[in-house]
Image 1 (cartoon, rainbow, N blue to C red):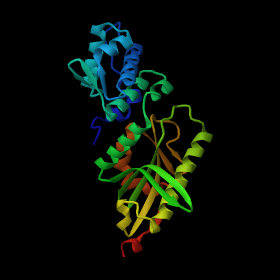
Image 2 (cartoon, one colour):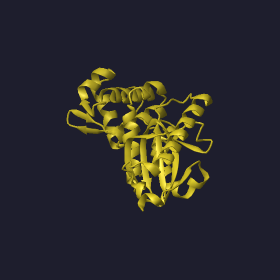
Image 3 (cartoon, helix red, strand yellow):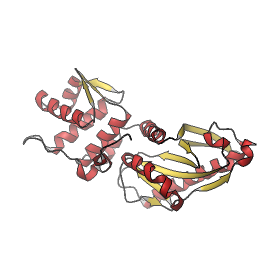
Length: 257
């Protein structure tokens, strides 16, 4: 598991930390935003964070050490280091402290969502391919992440969205991902994509949407909409629940003949 602490999955309501009087939640969230802004390349100098956040050195270091204890970042002498997983956890932490969703999301790259999704799928035994390009019905298609674990082919679309998504926007995105997933299932009998499922007898192609934070649309027309830090929990339950979701069956027996 990428996250052993169940608190992580529900960080929005359960993971706030209380500091000494004088260090408020706004200070915490502002510091996290500074870290997210400055570590887009993976690391930065602690001194740069001090300049960015305009916090006294002792306050900044106390918070950074607390975040390190929570596995939200790593302090290495004078540098602060992050990776895809910790940056996503930092983002959710900032949101739980009341930071503006669009501001936080603006410091995350969509590639970070892809890498996280790929790592989560691999940790559950899926063979993974990112940025899959294929052609079907004279049209070219692309899927962000595809995970194969017999009999499932999980087709992931990563969206860095904010909390105020409208139903009309959700409908468009879900319909587009359903269309891409069906196109892949239709293309499989005549394509060699390098996917593990190419040699299977049959497969079930499942569209999935991954978003930054949990929102009111957990399913839309049978398509799961998963908050990124709940992805591990979702994958753990998927073998037992996918039959209740929208998917496309494809008989692939002739591919291995």
